[in-house]
Image 1: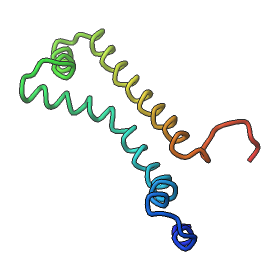
Image 2: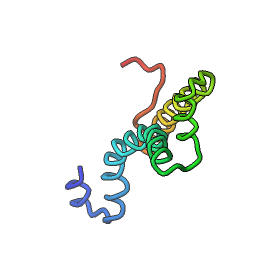
Image 3: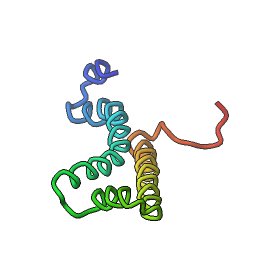
Image 4: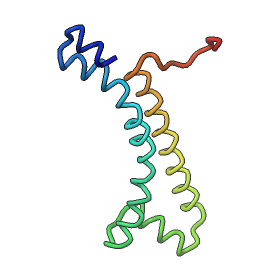
Length: 107
C-alpha cells in the first residue's frame, strides 16, 4: 500500500502520517500503556537505594513494619495504574486507527 501511495503521487508527509504511522503506532501504544506500572516498580528500587522519600520508600518501609493497610493501599494504587494504562492504550488505539473499534457488530 505504501508503494501504491508513492505511485499515485502522494506526498511523503501524507504517506508517513496516513499509512506508515497508523500501523507503526499500535505496538508502541501497547508498550507505553504497559510500562506505566513499571515506572512505579522502578520507583520502589530507586527510592530505596538512594533513600528518597516517596511511594516506593513508603511501600518498602510498610513491608518491613508489616503495616498491612498501607501495603494493601500500595497494591491498589499499582493495580489502578495498570487498569488506567490499559484504558489509555485502548482509547488511543481508536484515536490512532479508527478501523479498530468495539461494538455489537457481528463478525
